Structure formats: C-alpha cells, structure tokens
Image (cartoon, rainbow, N blue to C red; front, side, top):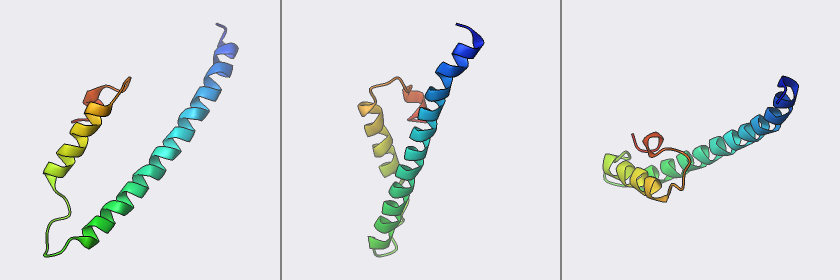
Length: 76
C-alpha cells in the first residue's frame, strides 16, 4: 500500500479512536459523579475508597473482557 493510501486508510480509523476516547472520558466522568454520590450517601465516617470494592470491580471487568484488550491492562 502506498503511503498516501495508507494515510487515507488511517485517517478514519484515528478519527474513530478519537470519538471512542471522548466517549470513554464522558463515561469515566459519569462514573466519578456516581462514586461521589455514593460517598455522600455513606454515613458514620465510613471511608469512600474501599480497596476490596476496587478489586471486585477489576475482577468482574477481567471476567467480562472479550478482548482484544489484554487482561494485564485491566487488572494491575
């Protein structure tokens, strides 16, 4: 494939990656907002961050991951 043909093929793919990145950012901000709401609902000085809960979430995501994203990038 010639360089100009390659650039024409890559352009739309990069544009789609940019769209997905924006969607990911929007979803992460939605999640952060909900996490803050959970923190406001908790009473009695209970810590908002719970490492065991984070572990549960990451383990669930690893189980649900169909790929091609390697599990090592989900569960650190």
